[in-house]
Length: 128
Image 1 (cartoon, rainbow, N blue to C red):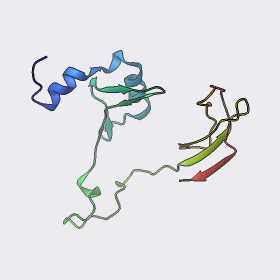
Image 2: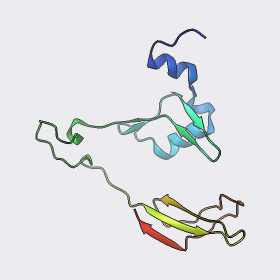
Image 3: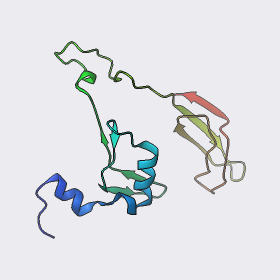
Image 4: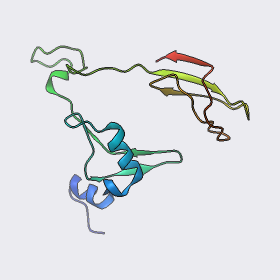
């Protein structure tokens, strides 16, 4: 393989077409928001045991910079955007008694990472 000399050459060398990768297509469907979060047509995907990281571009306007000299607000949340609540949900599997917690944007069921039992409800949730 020839030497990679630019970031775009690295994406070409290590990326996959977005439409040919299930994780990249899911990321596009779930997170892409033109002008805020964008996922290129050629994308780097790093797969793990239970999911994948998908490379994306996040837009940060100048007005969101803290301590800038423009007199902009110190609030890093861009105007017109929203902040979602997050919950640390605590679970105990009714089948294998495995205990775990995970952070979600809702107090929702999860699947047991130890035995795969589906739709385990949290017994406790904390605001994060």
